[in-house]
Amino acid sequence: MGQQPRELTPDAGPWHRWGYELRETRKARGMSQQDLSRSALCDKAHLGRFERAERPVPRAIALAVDDALNAGGALVRGWDRANEDQPSATAAHGISRAGTRGHGAKLQSHGAKPLSALVTSAFGQAGSDDDDTDTVVVPCRIHGRIRFVPVPRRVVLASGLAGLAATALPAPTAAADTLSADMGSPIEHYAQLRRVMIQTDNLIGPRHVLPALQQHLVRLGTRRRAARGVDAAQLLALETRYEELAGWLAQDIGDERTAHGHTAKALDASHITGDSDLTAYILGRKAQLAVDTGHPADALGLAAAARRTARSGSRLEVIAVMHQAHAHAILGDATEALRDYDTALTLLGRAHDDGVWGSWLDEAYVSTARARSLAALGQYEQAAVGFDIAIAALPTAYRRDRGVYLARAARSHAGAGNPVLAAQIGLQAVGIAAETGSARIISQLDRLDRALTPANREQGVAELRAALDRIVLHQA
Picture 1 (cartoon, rainbow, N blue to C red):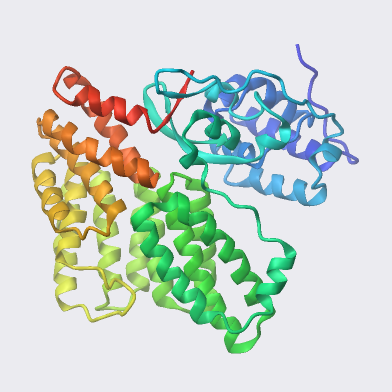
Picture 2: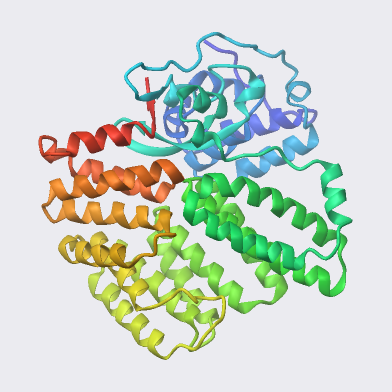
């Protein structure tokens, strides 16, 4: 039996305090270390060492256990405090480095990309402790389901799916930040750069765009803190839009925690700037994020707040009603959902031009959103017709969106009893998912995969499943 966790004393170090908080939170939830290890995808032995402060704690682990224990961010905030108090993990824990242990990720030769002991030890079972803190959120097939989990980058690289490891860049150096702050007025530069990144995201996907955006976000913050007056206000407005975009990109690679973090910062900053249009838009984004992360009841409240904040007669009001409609659909309330879509179309017919806000919003967009809700309500035949129309009208440059529509159309055709057509359409979506790394596409393909299980012998279904397996990681 392992050593018992050290009791908390007045002279306890920051990591002992964090470990004690972890243990007490776990016990308060009535969970054993084994229960928590399964829920947080972390090795049980490592959890014990984290509780006893015998091993450096990767931040991804703090995020994972906080989520598994429903701690509301308390463990993450505690981790941040401990890291600020003693940033050197080795000194803070008073332990020696474990070094390489020689049982890294095992690869299968038949094309699937497995993760050795992904569920039981995604962190720390292979490689050095330094490597364990460098993680990336990737799609992994676990017990038949595709889930997005943080995995050490070296394991992803070893798997042969190097494209999935492209979601981080080295942090800008202090020298680079200083140089950026000394440059001329950057406002138009950063505004144009954001527009370019939005266009690039739709072509090549968020995994390649998000790292660059996050670096520019750091530099933008440095410039804003050095500025005064009107320049500072304009830079903060830009920084807010960057935070919102970063939240969207993070959501699209399946990194829900990062998405929530960026979106929350954007909402806070929008209140500081006094930009009520931006506040309404971000409230709508939070409603969308709540639905996509399994909290549709929360989304209803956020969508209502977005509509109250939006100017009457604006396209932002239409967007808020659409988010409310889909939340109703996820909750199974077809009457309210379809009524809201009718309301959205009525509001859109008399909405004035809001410039950047909702400039892309038209009847076709509302119809496509309605098709998504119809699929959620199980009305697959109507949903399939809506998606087929949307795909035919979508511009070629909207590559990632095409993949999303294709995956949703395939799921709808499967639900409508057309497995062969569903497999054919799904196979097209797999190709775009491989190019872009979009979690929205892959998550929908996971639903399609499970919906087609009864039709395993149908033409194209096995080919679809094999193609999907080639772009995700697997347990060994």
